Image 1 (cartoon, helix red, strand yellow):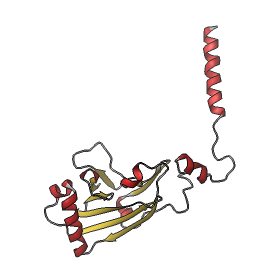
Image 2 (tube, rainbow, N blue to C red):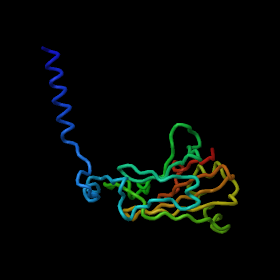
Image 3 (cartoon, rainbow, N blue to C red):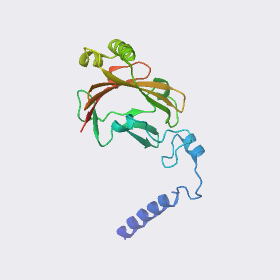
Image 4 (cartoon, one colour):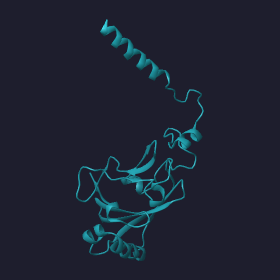
Length: 192
């Protein structure tokens, strides 16, 4: 008798929970509903969301989508890691800008440009990172010969810069400036 009651209650709970679930049963996108709930539909992202990465970024990164937003992450050809860690995987999320962190709702990229820096721009990047990032000061005494700058904007209009000094053809660095280039936003990208 006890076994029957337990089985009966498990069945009631299971079917009760399952009966309340539904997903896109009308075939129409529900971006407005998802956005007000703080999520985006990764299968049908908003019209202004970035859907592909420009070269050369696409060679060493991938665009990932979660219900809370988009982020840049390592691709299958590159390994991203923090300088003193092999366990925590770095990422560059659309919610990284300081102004975006405390605001509700999903964050996604609406602008993502990549520029190869000129020698003068590398000099300005080098001086800025020497001032703002202890990690950069520790690993880069001399300015690099090659670097990229990513100009990124999210759906809230908040911007960040990501500087990518190239140490070698198989080892890049990333420094997120959100707007300050803090040392905790620095990581290594190594070709596998």
